[in-house]
Length: 128
Image (tube, rainbow, N blue to C red; front, side, top):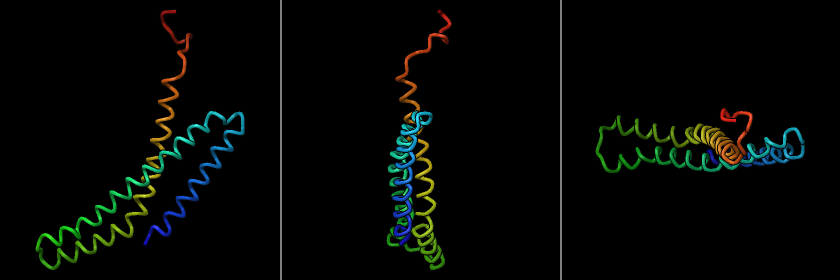
C-alpha cells in the first residue's frame, strides 16, 4: 500500500517543520516567523487526513457502484482500473495537495489571528 511510503515521509516533514519552527524561534530576526511555521505545521494534519479520506472514498465508490448496478463488462473493467488507479496513485497526489493546502490554511489562520489582535497604528488613522 502507498501509505508505507507516504506516512514515514509525512512524519519526516513534520519533524523538519518542528525543527524549522524551533530554529526560527531561537534566531531573533526570524522569531516572528516561528508562529507561522507552527500554524502551517498544525494545518498540515487536517489537510492530510481530509484529502486522503476523500481519495479513499472516491476510490471505493466504483467498487460499491459495481455491486449495486449491473453494467456492461467493459464498463466494469474500466471502473476496476479507475478504482485501482485512484487507490494507488491518488494518495500520493492527495497527500501532497492536502499538506500544501493545509500549510497555507494554517499560515493564513495565524496571519488573521495576529492581525486581529494587534493594536491599531495611530499613524494610519485619518482622524488623528
